[in-house]
Amino acid sequence: MNVETILRSFERMSVLLLIFMLVLTVLTSIIELGWLLIVDLMSPPLLLLEVDEILDIFGMFLLVLIGIELIDTLHAYLNEKEVHLEVVLSVGLIAVARKVILIDIKKTEPTTLLGIAAIILALSFAYLLVKKGRCGWLLFSQNSKGKSIE
Image (cartoon, rainbow, N blue to C red; front, side, top):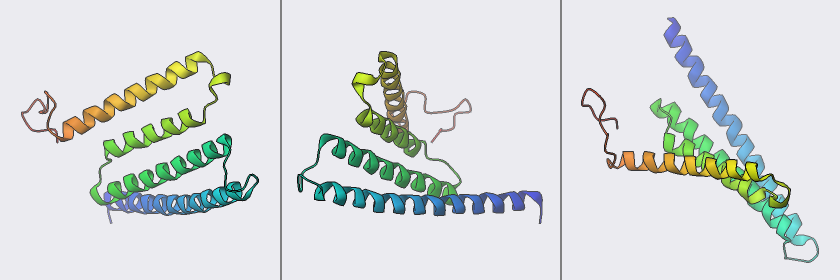
């Protein structure tokens, strides 16, 4: 066995271990989300949710989505040996959306809100570029050797 084979095996086992841990995390998060929903619905007033309870549920729901997207990213890396930038950017957008949903605007500094807005714009613009690039709409879709980037 050479060093390259050992490193590839180590990398594969590491990614499989990460996927397994993420699956466990997402599974326990789904169970916790279900429990949270049941407890909130069964507490007085019955079958009604307060605004803070709804925000907690939405935040937990988005965490589960982030976990699922991360599993998808690792799975694609394991099978194709490449990271799908589109999925990574969508995870970032979901994470920022979660932050926006949970943020207390009254207690947050205006500069922090501007920073979050800048992050949203940057991630959205990057996502747009990646999507357009996959469809062949970019003006500069070839590298310096004339080969397609895709």
